[in-house]
Length: 239
Image 1: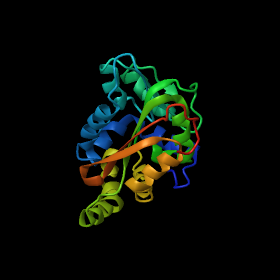
Image 2: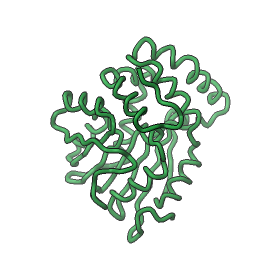
Image 3: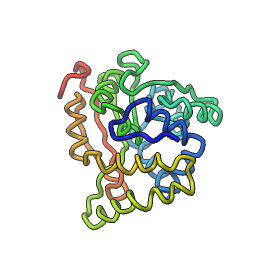
């Protein structure tokens, strides 16, 4: 079994997700106490995909996160660099156009999408700033980005309790539900090392996005960041 380290070597991260692909969605539902469905609903509302729009769903895994956009009539492209995830997704959702792609080198032309979203995947990109700039490149001027990612609970007592859950309880639960429980040790460690809400907002602005705002979900366990590519701005230029 493969377990990535915090240097996030792309090959190790991809192999780790290949290992957990078959039971990935079930394991996430269990570990989040069913909150993943509410988070997906919040992402769909924030993206607000319209019929005919082109939406990039980066780090889409098995494509579960892409379903709401397709139901709203958008042309959604679920993209991931884990071939194992893509294989499971293609088998379960054959009507979606799954694409293999690295978040730091996306296989799409400039301005190809009206909107892009990435849920619980930015944290796994080797260079998150390169990933944010690449997302900026493939979204048209005036287009929007929604990032859903684990963050820092806002109430200190709850934050301490959550940290204990991450490092002690989560790996124990994963041993009962996942084919690669060590992958969830990486999950816990990467969440603890991730910037808080304000820090990620600063990264988005540095990458060139504007009108950055965030909303806390589940007490700050997850944060939903929204941003817009500037009109007439050049991709990759800091705001």
